[in-house]
Length: 179
Image (tube, rainbow, N blue to C red; front, side, top):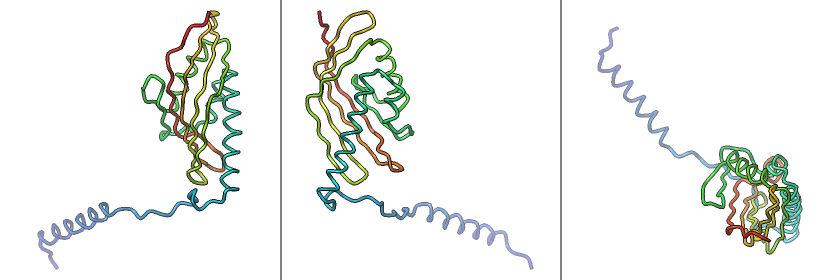
């Protein structure tokens, strides 16, 4: 039995139309396994705040040690990671690591004086941490600098049971030379 060429073209066109319609259908979202802060008990929220507080304390101790490799373990190294640097530029994990490694390599010492911090639990797997501080640095040249106003934000996400910063933003005023 012979088929007409027009029927083959019509069949192919119909298949392509169905394929295209299927591609334009929005994906069904699956519910996440997170608990919104409004559904959490105060004990659950406090436990998360304590976890983040301990993590932050460890992180800033590593910053004072000028250990870039250890510092970067607190961040999630994925293509989705974002950083906003003090100069207003955007960066990824590698850019943040390079920027800080360059800074650390010029310093002999760095001390941090926390001024204010806030931990805001958003869900059981998402926490926003903000801070303000003063930083005092002694460069390898012997010059001393004070960064009087440093502020930042870290968005922590619980990934495979561990808290990792998936976003980092830092702002700072220009350093002041100390005599």
